[in-house]
Length: 81
Image (cartoon, rainbow, N blue to C red; front, side):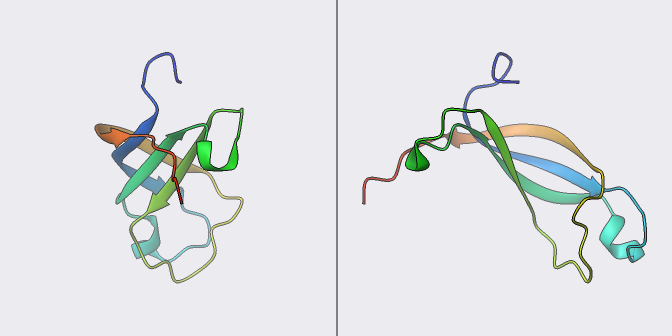
């Protein structure tokens, strides 16, 4: 993934694939994604951390999720505090 995108924060849409969730929890929802190596924690592996902007009524841990990247917001930065 990093070969086609630079590390940073992106805006996107995501959908948790229906299982036993309420219909409003399975809609296509706005999200942001951090793509990078998380320099604050000295990680060496590439990761994508997704934050869906929605107050889910139930847990969706372990369910399939689909995401579409729409645009770039800012580069990945290290915190200096």
